[in-house]
Length: 183
Picture 1 (tube, rainbow, N blue to C red):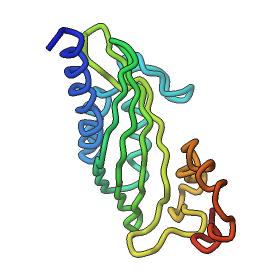
Picture 2: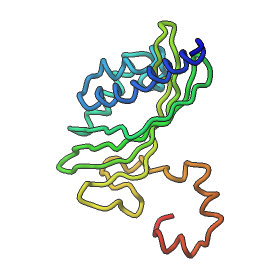
Picture 3: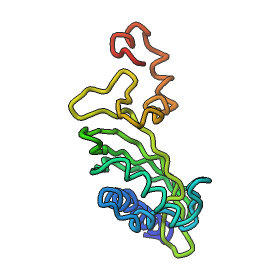
């Protein structure tokens, strides 16, 4: 195996550990572990700032909004851009205990990865997209968001996929109406 191919395999293996380390950090409420998955100079927005302390502050506030969580990583695609940058998508099913409800959320994380000067790979950016949020005892609501307190977090999947609209535009609209009340 030549050096470039070996480096690509090593990069994919290193990047492949980020989602599970993130999930374990979130589910165990280990803010240091969560912060260790993000680029040391990551920008968390104007409210939070930059770097590991900003990551910890953001997740401290976010994770206090519900009690238990369980993130199940279902699949991970990694596309190497160059020797220091990559992009990926992580499929995840997350469960959240929140005020007597057990909320299921189906997610895709759309990630940008970057290799830092220490040679390690990190999340440079993580975007959360989801299909629905619903109590485990209920079907997803017509708007696919039935998680009290999170009404502003409307699902953007599956419509975020560029192929989604093109696929259904080629079909019979009456058939779509038979399949779903909320296209």
